Length: 286
Image (tube, rainbow, N blue to C red; front, side):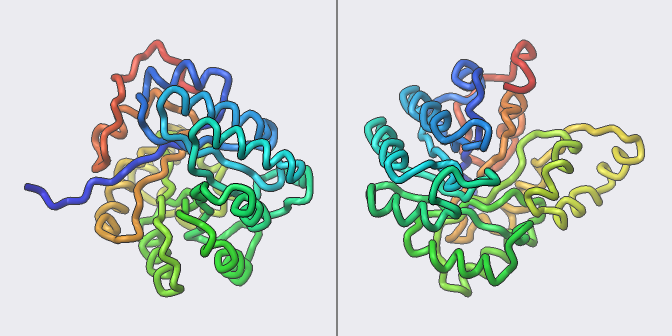
């Protein structure tokens, strides 16, 4: 019998209008989902979609973005709705909104109030294996120190380097942080889109590593922005940290390119979702 560890997987999805109708055709409940909170959508849309997905039988982890929440009263309302729907896990971020909607400007403030209002929730926080595009190392360390004791898990920013992930887990451990870590990796997505996201997410160094492969160099010479294949990256990460006690599983940033996921997940060392084969009739993005 193989002793190779089998990883868990969680899909990050955007609460688009078509998500609820298309997702069950591609990825079946009780799969695990993380639901984003984008500035132009707002938290109400994330909460509503998360509740509907939970009612379909998915394990749902809604994002709450601090800078998009208008008040403590609004936060209490969201937490009550989620709790009543049986949702027990959250992921808290500062969010990309330029001007805070209320008094919350970073995720630490939000985490404190979530724990004060509804301590029964498990809460995930963000990790940055290659640093943050705005915050320096010292700021990131202070932020992590302030939040780690109240958190239950961590999700890393999307990364393209197995070395960077392995080094980050070692750094966490040496700092006394023992949170389970969901390693953020891209799902099937165009190289063009990855480049557009790279600067904003602060993953430039590992993007250069991904771009440096022979296949990628050939694509760049042709100027052909095809889809990035993350299978090799996931296998490399799994080989490096699959037995690490901090490794919780893979957090797959899908960009809602769900129709390509069954083929990708079917060949990886992860617990297989009960997914139907991809159907060409399904739209490429939902």
